[in-house]
Length: 194
Image (cartoon, rainbow, N blue to C red; front, top):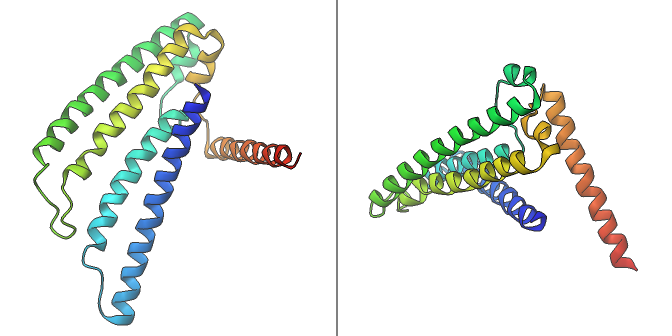
């Protein structure tokens, strides 16, 4: 299960980095072409907009996985463990319902736009609206997994309900994750040398 989770995490990170890189190249290239050569790529702005939409939605999946979405936990902190579990599961069931609504709406709008194309790129608009399907399924899997963990893994409830207090805490968490990755790469390299 951990390997599958790591693979999904790696794919998500690569896709976000790829969309950001392509978007930057398109926008920067278009600016250079306009100011230096008095020409430009006609579809650059539209494609950058589509990539930005995809990047934001993919980032929302990553933020949910890392428990980085905004939340108010004043009440949750005051509750005993059993009540915390009930409130956490109830709130996640509500999120699951909202994700179902997102999936249903995204599916309908994607199907209705299969034959509509974007004016500059000519891409079917279903590619743009289809991200709603991907994000609702991806987030739904994460929410279901969190509910499972809250029900059956006793020690994980505090981890699941913990909100980050400040930007410093978020930066510290990212730093620790980078250090873990770096340490894992060192161990992998040392194992390969033997």
